[in-house]
Image 1 (tube, rainbow, N blue to C red):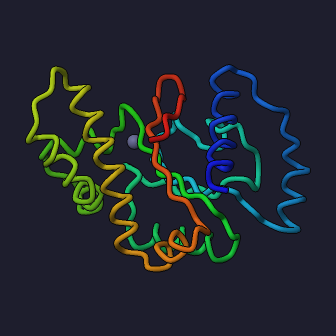
Image 2 (cartoon, rainbow, N blue to C red):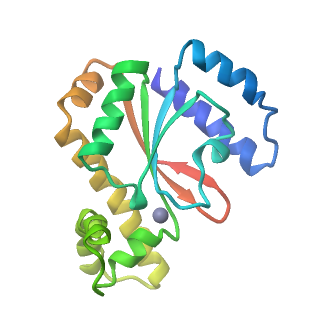
Length: 192
Ligand SMILES: [Zn+2]
């Protein structure tokens, strides 16, 4: 079940990469989704303007339920948003995607004073920064990518720890939780 859904994302992503996007009759898709909304995947990713999920996965209207927050972090409201989709649309796949050159992760390495709200993002990413700071890397890009991937895993663990509803759906094999790394300059998504 879950793998088929991941394959839909992978197929759409390769159409995008190969510049072979499908014809989407958006008006028709919208009409169909007005009758019944059944997005097959919940995509959690960063707000970065270069990585719009519907385009990266070559989807139109009604297929993806998207949660976008800087640094693809999951706070109470984001988790509630995911639970809402699972309960109301029977969506069976969650994909948490981090991406290369992520400004939210990059800025979290920098201790400069920021607004209360930007600091809240940074606090959520901080454990990944702390882990990266304990290791040695050849380049800053390597270090940044490590922190981005670490942050994806941290957010996944946090989601599983926080949401009993999501744990139950996964245990009953009604839901799959996937993670992936999006290469911003190509749009290629690598699922872990
Ligand atoms: Zn980002």
